[in-house]
Amino acid sequence: MAMTSEMHLRESGQSSAHRFDYRGMHRYLITLPTFRQAAVFTAKEPVMQVLDLLHDSCLKSHFDTYAYCFLPDKLVMIVRGKEDSSDMKAFLALFRAASSEALRSALGHPLWKKTYMERVLRKTEDNKKIAEEVFQLPVKAGLVAAAAEYQFQGSLVTRPRQSP
Image (tube, rainbow, N blue to C red; front, side, top):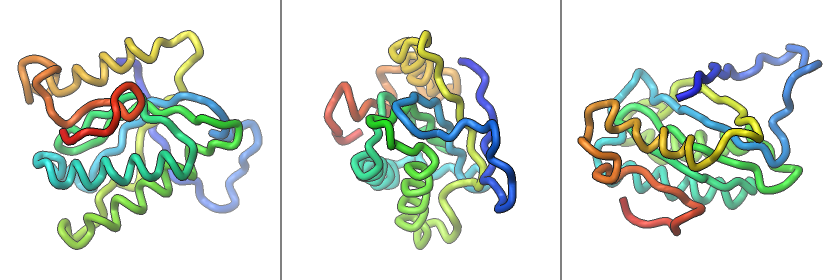
């Protein structure tokens, strides 16, 4: 899989000159690690809670999720803005806040680490190929022998939302 860069929340006062503004119909490969690498996504209930909030955040922020994979300690996904005004940072802020709040009482701490990895995908990069790489992550992690066996992955675009 291609390398990703670590995204830090920007401090107030930092210059935004010559920065990519993360608005528009761009595609992103995003990895959201859990707080302290906690193995949160090993059972169906927390995965479904977070998946429902991902779906809601996509609708509110005008994003599509082409592929998602909940590994025990992270969520990896391919998302795309659906409109020129789609703002990836605002979408992620909404999703991360809602999902962290939903699980805070059960976990006793935030769901997500403060930083995350993101990469803007080039126009020449194929969604299907990158999605296949995302779906191979549970195999590479030794969680299953074949990607099709892993229940906590899918798409909110090519297949309607279903129970993992």
